Image 1 (tube, rainbow, N blue to C red):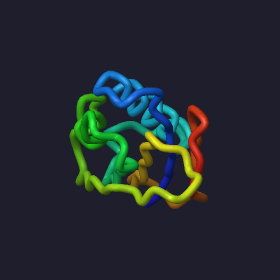
Image 2 (tube, helix red, strand yellow):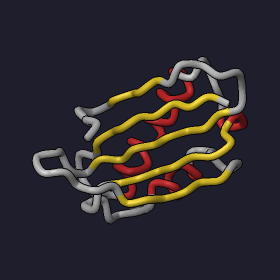
Image 3 (tube, rainbow, N blue to C red):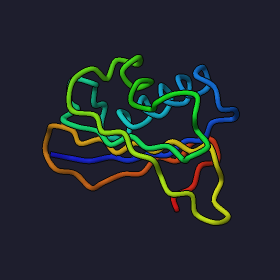
Image 4 (cartoon, rainbow, N blue to C red):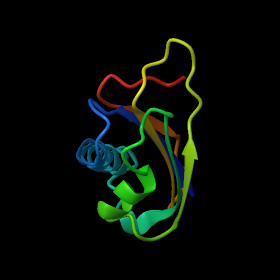
Length: 111
């Protein structure tokens, strides 16, 4: 099993922005994991900061084709001084173990 994680930031809190950011992030994560696909996903943890209220990251991931595997949605703790409207994804993928990778998009930060 291998894992890859990434964070992105929504410009506005809307379903369309969430869908676009999630599609971009998942595509980047699949590339970072060595051209993985949605079929390789065993499970995923999808989180958002408390100010992302327009929709659920897991629902946006499903709309982008992440239908298999177990998806767990969580709310991220907002750290003082950290940017808001962030969405984070941790994918567990089938395949040989590799060094974990982190993808940061749209000015997102790890807290």
